[in-house]
Structure formats: structure tokens, C-alpha cells
Length: 258
Image 1 (tube, rainbow, N blue to C red):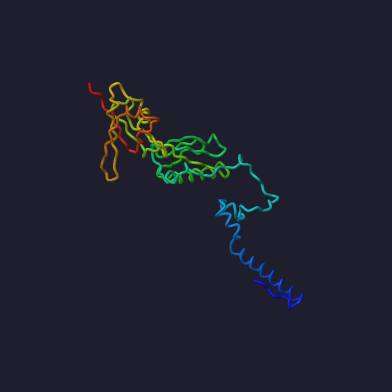
Image 2 (tube, rainbow, N blue to C red):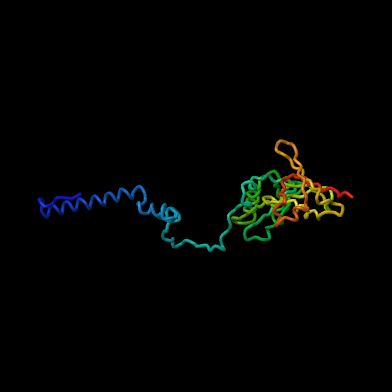
């Protein structure tokens, strides 16, 4: 727009310039109050810069003066976050007799270690004594143990519970293996057929490696039988054709025919 200012003289021109500058400042103020400037938003979206980096920091992450009495704790001095083995399933697992758990007490190695829940449903701890844990979830057991330490032994204890093995996750090996029996599945990990056979000491001299069956339960209550030629598994690269096992699988190794 072209402004015709001649007839107003110098004073009129100054007035028009002042109004124009005021409008420009007001518009910029209104634009920035509700959202970031267009240039900043365009950079975040079109320029490939993550929005979290493009926008100014807010909240506790924003730069702010350090309190003079604040204590900075170096990373090596910070306690780890209280957790189980990192999965919601592990935290909600209900402990039972025979389950194995790992207890880590921060900066207290003599109070840490692996424990197995005995027939009475409890663990025996060197400091806290008998602690009943059967029937509690891993998260609940962690909280119980933490309260016991905080009440009588330690100030603000930091405790981590991890489920190592569960009797509810197990497999059975039968037939021509050197150590047939019931074996726990490591919780949260995968065990394969070859690993299970190795855990049982391998095949006997009478075993037929090409006559191995895996009997597996179905959700509808039925069973599925998988027939496996172990000699073929051994020929595959990096065990890529190995069979991952599931809880309650029954592995049967038949005898060789003469």
C-alpha cells in the first residue's frame, strides 16, 4: 500500500510512520503469545530439527540459576531406579515355592544375592531372617523387603528384585537324554530345543536324534506334537532353525531302531 503523505506535511508523515511501527509491534506480539514464531516452527518441521530441540526449554529442564545450597550428586553416587527386570509381566508375576529371585540392595553387597523360595513359601536372609514371599507379586515382595530394611536396619534402602526362574515356567525332558527331568525356563529369556538337550547332558548312546518330539499345550486345552530332526538343526547356520520352547513343553527323545 502506498501512503500519500504530502498534504499532511512532515508532522503528518511522522504520525503515519509511528502508527505503522506500532501496528507491526502489536501484530508480532499477538503472534508470539499463542505459538512459536513461524520461522521456528518451519525449521522444526521442514528443516529436520526435532521440535524438542527447536522450541525453548520449559519446566524443570529449563536453564535456571543453581541454588547456592544445592548438592550436585555425581552419576557414580546416584542410586539406580527401583525396578524389577524391566517388564510389567515380571513385576506382576506371583511368586511361589521354588521360584528364584535376585535381590540387590544398593551399596550393600553383603545383603544382596540370589534366593530361592523354600517349601514354606519364604526366603532366608542373613540379616532380616525368614521373609514370607509366596503369594506376592515381584513388585509387592520388593516393597515388603524394602520396608523391613527401612524399619530396622537401613536408612532409605534402595532395593531391586529380579525374577531369575519360576516353577510356573518349566519344561520336561524325557527319554534318551542323560539327565531327564523338569527344567525351569529362565524368566524373560528364550530357551531353544538344542539348549534344553544340552542342559540335560545331551543324548544317550541309544538316542535317535532324528526322532525327537515336542508335545505342546494349546490354549483350547488340546495338544500339538512337533516332530524334529535334530541332525538338520545342527546343519543350519548359527542355529537359525532351532526351535524356541514354550512353558510346559514336553520333549521326548526316542530310541534308535536297530
